[in-house]
Image (tube, rainbow, N blue to C red; front, side, top):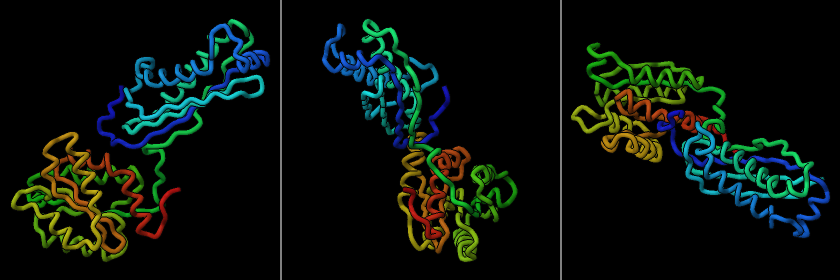
Length: 302
């Protein structure tokens, strides 16, 4: 199975359809209730719901997903029964396979219950018709420029090689975000505050990401420097980072990082370790980039 432990939880939904072609006489007998195996429509609905919940047992590489809602609609068409399965879950992976499995199982159940009276039936057009949730929904803004600031006394002295800042630069580049300035500074509050002001006030940088200096050590002053500079705080970003981190490492509760806006520049503090930075970026990207579009006067997606 694919490892999805790093992915954040979000609302996922999917819709799938299937068609069972049959004789007109079969539809008439369904309407009249004149069938040897009772009500096929009601049984097929239940079968689809049960199948959606058992998808991970039927398809080896599917994850177990705690489904919040499964709905089956079965309607008559021209010499056909049309099945529509809708599935929703708040989880780390999509529910496309659950929707497809539900539609398929409902179609197979109808076939099984009706085959005694109709040998012309065919199951056709099993397909996914809609999906939402996850990164596939996100459309990155057209242009972004970022700066990365590493806060570390040892890295600034050259006695330790930086990895966290390079991780940030690499992940942003994958999304087409151009990283202009890349600074390695000592853990000095005044020096960081001055750099943040200078970069933000120049007006050419949309995003500044700092790494390091967010803990409770005597030299950890990145949050204070950032609070000194920002004009509008974004507490939800910092809260989400800590909550996401604590699900993976209880020490994340000690991070004091903050986020906020100065002018039209978004500033976000990340922890100093490479592992914590990676986890933070898993949560933030690409969704944090939507804030850059809003800061430029854009609207929320429909």
